[in-house]
Structures are given as C-alpha cells and as structure tokens.
Image (tube, rainbow, N blue to C red):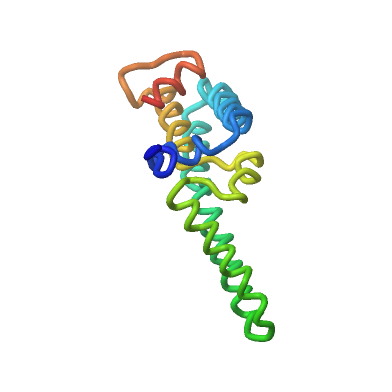
Length: 149
C-alpha cells in the first residue's frame, strides 16, 4: 500500500501511465536510437544536444500549471469563480508531486512527452553508440536496455 501512495520518484510517472503509452514512448526511443546508432559522430552529437533541450513531463506540467495559475489569478480579479480553477490546478500539482499522476499526465504521455529518466536513457544509449563507454552493444533495444541499468 505504501508504494501505491508514494511510488519511487524515478518511476512514479511510468507506474501511473497506461502501458500502451509507455510502450509507444519506448518504441519511439528505440527507433530514434536505431536511426542514430550508426550515424556520424556529428549527427549523434546533434541528437544528444537535442535531447539536452527536450522538455520532460515535469517541466511541461510545471509550466502549464504555472501559466494556468497566473492566468486564473489575473482573471479572478474580475470574477471570483475563476479562483476555483486555481485550486484545481493546485490539487493536480500536489497529486502529481506525491503520486506521480494527475489527469493531464495521461494526455501528455499519449502525446509522447517523456520523463527525464527516459530522455537520459536515450542519451546514454547514443553515447554507447558513439563509443563513450567500454561496452558497445550493436542492437538499438540492447543499447537502451544497457542504458536502463
């Protein structure tokens, strides 16, 4: 019961995401690794740089929530009922912080927004392909599996 209320931080989003969305995200990651694993070092470096700038689900949720709170607070100056939306956004953010899930999360995950850990795993797999580490699996799925360890 304790793990359902407070799941591990690194896996809480994946644990509260639909399995098909998790699988779709993983398959997209494997495809990206497959495309870039035998590419030139320049293209691998470019992809790693893109990954450094990719927004993870925490950043998307935090930015969206902050923007909604700011907007509803401004609108609330004229109409007091708008402050209800501010409370709903606050509740969603609290729920996400504690449990790793909230209603907008399902939509974001279906859209392919990844966690920081998932982005890091792709970067690590590409660094494996680039030769940054001693081990060098050749298959994209094997590379991702090595990065997940």
